[in-house]
Length: 266
Image (cartoon, rainbow, N blue to C red):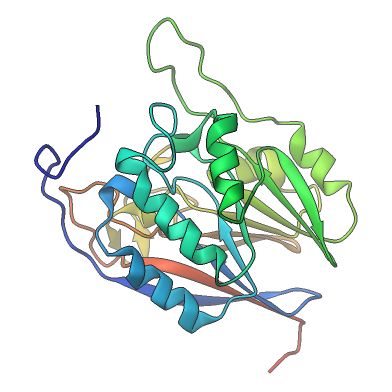
């Protein structure tokens, strides 16, 4: 059964902004990171997000998960997922787009994948592609616990990061859960990982997030850039107020722009 405007909880309207962070890299690129749109929770029109993307003129658009509400119970173009598909269809007309499933898209079906690819989205479900000097991959999410006592929760493909890192090129990994970075990704030579999921910590006090899914109170990876040697984790605050009835404080929704540029660039 689909959610409707009548049976949804009231949502807190928030604005969407562009935030740009700079990352040293051997290539010069502008990457737009669009995470956690959570289609049914959408607090802003899709056309506002597309307007911002057009104005930012990214070279690539990365979707590191949770663009949809639940692809396990409905198609990406149906019901409460259709806003996410509308966003992706429009984004594909702006720049090449890459998508890796988050926990809300876990177990993405072959039919849903075909729909996404038909509108111009490159789906990376524990896969990678070469794009010139870049190698772009996606580590798909598992989830933390079973939905019922009869299920075993899936875990991420922990062998994928090593296979991905062995490829040549500058590595860009889409990985929805930032908590995976330290456990499965860091230390392998994957230069840039783009994540979401943490929602910026929902409330931010003294520059620190208060709570994030999967990390709990005072999450370590909630927002911005984290470095280990020459490897970088970039965490978006997300595009929507995922917890509709709890406002975000000091934590604006965002499209995160990553400006990749050589060291010493002005």
